[in-house]
Length: 335
Ligand SMILES: Nc1nc2c(ncn2[C@@H]2O[C@H](COP(=O)(O)OP(=O)(O)OP(=O)(O)O)[C@@H](O)[C@H]2O)c(=O)[nH]1
Ligand SMILES: [Mg+2]
Image 1 (cartoon, rainbow, N blue to C red):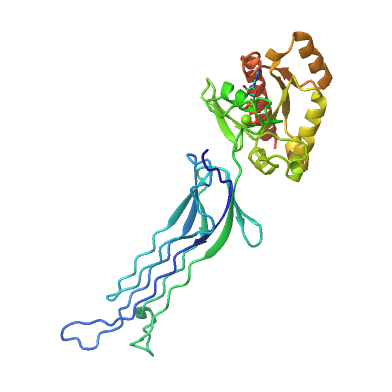
Image 2 (cartoon, rainbow, N blue to C red; image 1 turned 90 degrees about the vertical axis):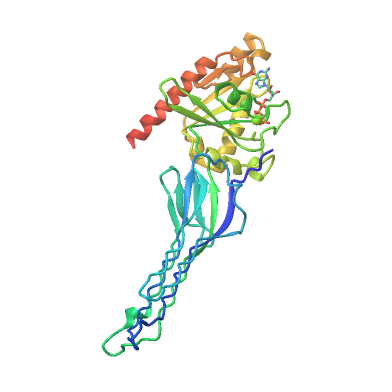
């Protein structure tokens, strides 16, 4: 299984400014030339760059110091030192950056263009040429460069998806994801097959896309750490709508829905406030009367019966997904 890291602490250190030079002009027949020490270069800055090809933070190393280059020394003949090279750390789109000491959010890198400077390089020191004055024609000193900024930060990945799939283990979330998107998640007849979130993309005919996140199954007491806990719910924090998936062959579906909603609620009430739809899956396993009974039991108008395995009602589901997206778009437009 590929390694999946969605939170990590690293250190970043921008380059120090290069020291200014102490130097005097030397030329044949000019015994006492003036000061000509140039300034040191600026230390390299450290940037965080969202990269849409990355989906985890697994390429980074915990507690490692990521350093940008120091500024170069100033030189004689009034030559400036070169600036240190900047360091660009690539992170997945959707990475939140927190200050390790205070927990304050420093940045939320939700779009590709949002390159963020996390540590500023120190400015270079002045060379002795800068300090020449009427009272001191031959300064024999220069400035050191200023130190580059150093920080310890926490990177927190929150995947960016339009729709989140939520259900008990084994309900058929990954099967549905593989049916309606390009994703090929692991599917098996045992709970907790999915251990890390999977993302799938629906390519629509009009060229737009809809991204769906399939997360591990949730069980009763998940908010107390049961099963895989709830920390992966951060990956559906940003979704526009939620699809609850219930296995129609289970006994008490209203209770199951209540359980799922209350686990979401204990993580964040924003999750339960999102538009949702309830999918009763695996209808190929039951007779029609049972399907009707189970739909009635839900006492909710947002219910659709499907079979992720055979594809029954998947077309209707696609229309519902479109409607949920339109609704979310309209709600955003109203804000
Ligand atoms: N008969 C039938 N079986 C299904 C259907 N959908 C899923 N399954 C089966 O149910 C089992 C669980 O499916 P998964 O897609 O792995 O379920 P999941 O919800 O992703 O499970 P976790 O990752 O463990 O949370 C697999 O054996 C699937 O083949 C369906 O519509 N009909
Ligand atoms: Mg799964």
